[in-house]
Image (cartoon, rainbow, N blue to C red; front, top):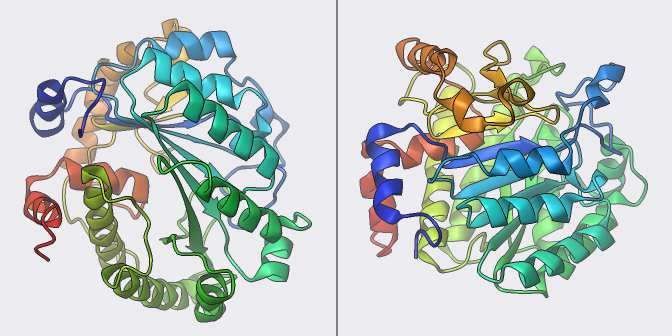
Amino acid sequence: MITQKANLINVIKNIYFTKNEPVSVVHFVTNRCNARCSFCFIDFDNPKTFEGELSLDEIDLLTKNLGSSLLNVNLTGGEPFARKDLTEIAKLYLKNTTAQSIYITTNASLPDRIEKFARDISSFSPSTELSFQISIDDVPEKHNKVRKIKNLFNNCIDSYRLLKKISTKINPVVSITVTHENCDNIKNIFDYLYNKCEIDAIKCCIVRDEGVYKTPEEKRKKIFEAYNWLTETLKDKIQDKKVLNYNKSIQGKLHKKKDIISWDMVKEMYLKPKYISPCHAASLFGIITADGKVYPCEILEDKLLGDLREHKMSFMNIWKSKKTKETKDFILKSKCNCTYECALTYNILGNYRYQPKLFSSLFNLD
């Protein structure tokens, strides 16, 4: 089933016609992190960065007002497992919303917490799809140095292998962020992960200007070339079924094709910003910060839609507000565009032009 808890007709109506409820949200549950990556957008030098995390009681109220079309929630940070109550947060989303999948973005520095979370959530909701995006950006010593955590690489591999053994509903994948620090070595990094570590689920994304991070201009072309090589290599491996990022479900097939469309879109826009198709941020997709601010996406940092605490934790009050309507109009009229992969996912899903490719993927026609 494409939808389990949500009404399929309502979801289709929302995605293709009304576009007035989120299908997915990214919730930054914390800004705390034990890593200090040079390309991170979080301002760790500002003490206010760590203030005001939403409590469990507040998240309980939030999750009771996310509409009737929510299919996925991405719990991220910071490092989400820095919150010892992450399991309880996930359970609130599963209990109070129509979400049927949870996506965790993690540096995998805490394998014991990760394994316990996966087992607890699998027991609590056996039908829920759990995806773990494990960040690995270089070979062992360099990865540990870049992220500034001792033995991090080994913890990542341990986490990946532990998750693989738990359930077919649990999908760990290694994600390589192509940056100014690893773009000259991307072939060796992929070879090490794929051949030496025998990782058979690998994705990638490209570093973007956000928050306090700005890409060095002299490295931009090299970053693009590395990303292009890596995505083309992954396409070949996926085609040959040597890289398996998803299961064989309907959702898995759709997501596999979506990734390939998204990679091509990013490459078309990266060196020279270009409008390709309408963005559905603030319509089908949104961001919740650790302290309860709601934004259309990570990129539009000047487009605050509202503060949940000022709206009695009612997300939909903010989502249906005049401010959000004005922001949606701005996004469409200005032909807003970027390489933010999370937003691209729902731009692809909600755009008619991509439906033939997505539909054909269900029958392996291309």
